[in-house]
Image: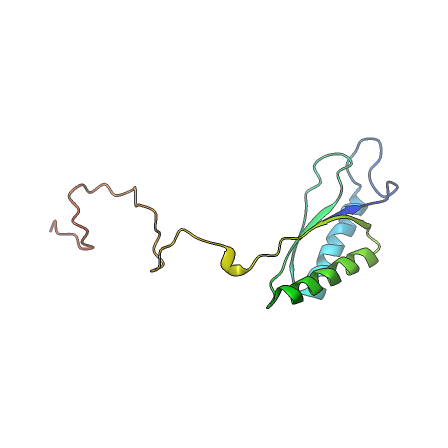
Length: 131
């Protein structure tokens, strides 16, 4: 989930400067509270542009989509009531763990061809026969 906050301009940096140190400290404090309360992975986004809105990224696992949705709703409610700022946007990606594919075959071996093999006379044997 990605949450973007709308922070009061009095709290943000003025005159074309980036957000003030207190806003960054409050964001870090919110991140730590979320980690402690919900036992989730939370990262604050880097504020690179002047006037850019504070953002946090959240990752969590749950047994079902329903329980994950409830947890994310609770997280949003907690963020809104934290006093940090109003949630401007919220984007959620709910995927089942099985939907994350890989390049492995059924035996767990990398299915891509091995390009670093310099042996032209290799017969496929795992043993070195040069001795």
